[in-house]
Length: 73
Image (tube, rainbow, N blue to C red; front, side):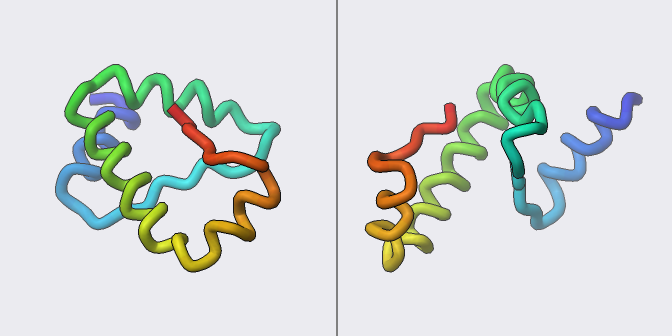
């Protein structure tokens, strides 16, 4: 079992947060790899929706930084 497989197994059974920080990290590659599994992709999209709900009180401030909604997928 590879370390990434072990990590993905843990995601299904343990509370977690996925953080892709910094522009110098290859987070888009990691996200693309995770979204090859339809179940994981659906879960990640659900997490994004939940984060958007939690951030709704400060959404206008966040939009000021990017100027538009951000679709990380």
